[in-house]
Amino acid sequence: MAQNLKICEIEDSLKQKLTKFRFRKSKDNGAIVMKIDSTNYMIILDEEYEDNITIEELQAELPEHLPRYVAYSYVYHHGDGRISYPLCFIFISPSGCKPEIHMLYAGSKLELVNTLQLTKAFELRDLEEFTEEWLKKKLAFFR
Image 1 (cartoon, helix red, strand yellow):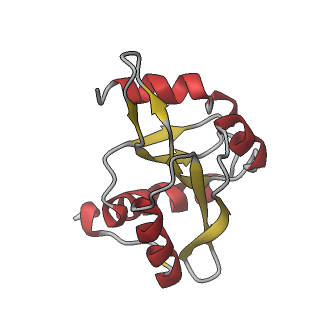
Image 2 (cartoon, one colour):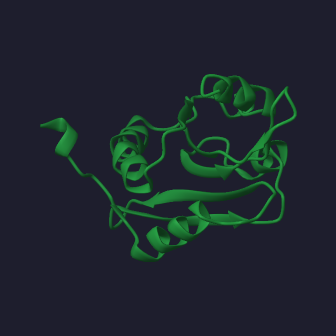
């Protein structure tokens, strides 16, 4: 029964933007950062980065004490010379945020991941851990 629980809706314009982002042809890093508008329980666009944003640059743009969802298109250089472009979903919920805000985000995460049809979904409790090394380690599982 808990699997059918839907806490927040996804804004229609955000759904369209995420679909377009999912099928983008760009060969560089990009990100869509999402947040929850708690007044109407809607997942909305916070920021969009199309211009080859590195993980370190993205980390600097994210709030330190508020949760965020990130759809990150990453240029992954494999050890054997191949290049892939995985679309990763990253739920960042810093340990210092209010419990009710964390629960709101955590409860809405599955619906967002399912709507986006993403298989590479990761979670972080500390923004400082969000590094390229961390992401490569997580993606190594999917080789």
